[in-house]
Image 1: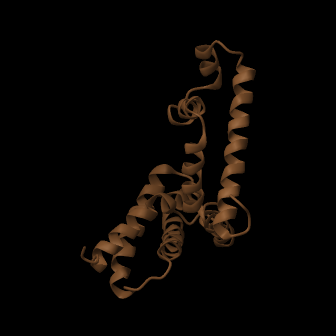
Image 2: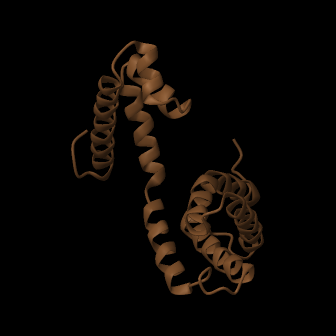
Amino acid sequence: MNEPTPNEQFVRQLTECQQNLYAYILSLVQDVDRAQDVLQETNLVLWRKAAEEPLIENFLAWAIQVSRYQVMAHLRDRGRDRHLYQPALLELLANDAADRLEGIDDRRRALQKCLGKLTQSQRELIHRRYARNEKVQDIAEGMRRPAGAVAQKFYRIRKSLLTCIERTLGSNSGTADA
């Protein structure tokens, strides 16, 4: 198979980091529409800059840095109200959001692996609650079970998933057993 061209590689990397970039931007601008606007502007800047810097070691870190500048420019241009644009506060928030994004892909992969270890009925409950956004009360009624019992079941499943994720991530870094 042929090696991907630099443009193909860029598109692949950009596509892979879109969710993370959007989450990062949204955490800073706190508005869905504005976050999408900033993401689109960030994508354009990344495309332009990629030609200047063809060998980017950590694409996500680079993209986050570019998006940080785009967020600051957006907030600055949006309004001069000092309550909307406080560079020092934005810098703190941006650093915190960037720190939280580190390792998110590893956590996502670990979650998928751990979901696969649940029983079919546990996966169905998780799907109903988080994919279909059903309320615990509605799920309990459908199961003809007390809502407290179903809530306790979710607690145990989430606790099991958290333990599995931590164990999986620990084994990947060589600090714990799987």
